[in-house]
Length: 237
Image (tube, rainbow, N blue to C red):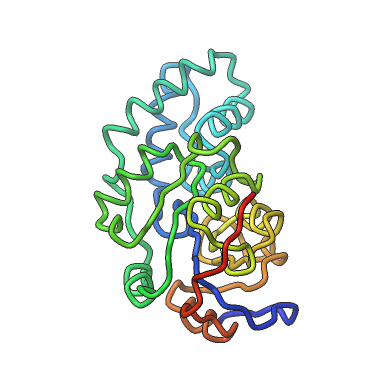
């Protein structure tokens, strides 16, 4: 059941920005395997999928730094990042899957412009979407290095808004973490958090709405009075 904030008034949503990992796809098993391959020569215990879900969200370099801290690992960070990326690039979607209801929801939202903003590297985002058959749904894909900063900074949100000529009040971000919510609120756009991703619902209460399935998103946008007939407004940084 979706949970709505009473602070959101009727708005005309033209653009939906989606997070990738933990929102559109569950990539935690492949990320976990790549991390364990990266640290294997150093005698570390394998991290679990649950630990992986707690650690991801800020990009591969921060992920490796968190694993190093977790394991008190004295190693060269860049070597570990390189080992991670080498394996992960070769096994990108072996165990990765699209969450239930996502593709159906994307298809039903065909009237809206759509973007992906992720802290995963852009080339890996593009490959993930392409290889899982989701690429055609999105107008633009922004990865960790596409804009001048990553979430929770609002900079990648501003980047998308400017590229697509959309005013903040006409956009919404859908994600599974506090990074998505913070980035969206800082950018002045509506925020929706999914409860099925990598973070528990109690961490996401600052979002304007919580949904338990992507299938609830079209109804939520209708509830907010979303319309797409007016795309003439111009906005710039």
